[in-house]
Image (cartoon, rainbow, N blue to C red):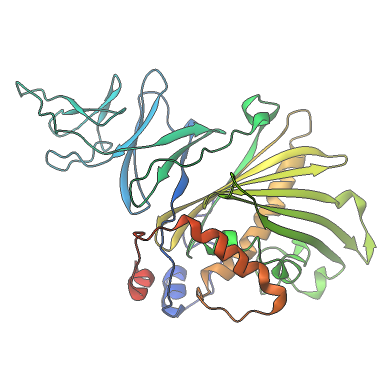
Length: 374
C-alpha cells in the first residue's frame, strides 16, 4: 500500500511532495470532479457483521454498516437531529444504525428513524438519506449521481471470482493527485505505451531512470486498440492489449500476454489476463475520488487457484511498476480541455466524448483555483 504523497512526486526543498505538485500545476478548466457511476467503498472483508465505517469521498460523508444477517447499507453519516456522525461510535442494532449521541436509530433500507429512546412518538419526517449500494466481486460499492438518479446499470459479477475458480492473490493501493478522468484516458492514449511502458520493468518506476542504458537490453512491446461498446453497454469500453518482450533484440515468447481491459463506468476496470502456459486471471481496478483531485486506486488480482501463487504476484508487481510510472505523469501534469493533438492521437478525443456521458448538466464544478488548493 502506498500512502498519499509517497509515489510519483518530484523533490522540492521545504515542501511536501504533494504540495509541490499542486503549486506547480497551473490552473486549468477541469471537468466535474465526481462523475456519475458506481465506486468502490471497501473490500467486503473490511466490513464484518455488526460493524460501521465512516467514509469521506465524492464530496459526501457516508456511514457504511453491515447488519448481523450480512446486509450492507450506506446512509448519510450525519444524524439529522444534532449532526453527530452515526458511524463514529454508533452501533448496529438489527437493521438500523444507532446514533452515538442520543440513541436515535435509523433503518438502513429507507433511512427512516424507527426509535428515539426518550420520545413518545417518532416524527414521520425523521430520516437520513440512503445511497444505493451493492456487494460484488469481493467489494462494496456505492452509486453516485449528482441529481439523485438511481442506478442505470449494474456492476457485472466476474463468474470465476464468484465461484472461487479464481482466488485472491494480492492487492495494491495508490493515491493519485489528479482528476479522475486522467486515469482511464490512458487506455485510449496508445502512443504513450512505447515511451512510458516500453523500457524494461527492471528499471523500476522512477521515470528519471527507466531509460537508463543499464536496462536497454530488454524492451516491452505493446499493440493496443481502444473502442467504446455499443448499446445497451454504452457505459463500457474495451482496450485490447497484446504484449511481448525482447531481450538483446530476441523475441521472448514466454512473455507473450493478452490483456482485455473492460472499463465499466467511470471508476471500474476489469483486466483479464490470458497466457498460453501461465493460465488466466483478472485484475480489478477501482478508482474512487476521495477529493476533487485525489483518487484512491486499488488493484486486486484473482488467479487460477491451481497455478503457483508466484505467477499472479509477479504479474501484480509488474503492473504496479508500470502504474507508478503513470502516477508520476498524472501527479505533475495539467488537464488541458483543448490539447494539441496529431492525427495519431484521435483516440484521446474519442475517449473524452465517450467519458462525457458520466457528467450531467448539474454536475458539481469547481473554480480552477479551488480545484488546486483542495
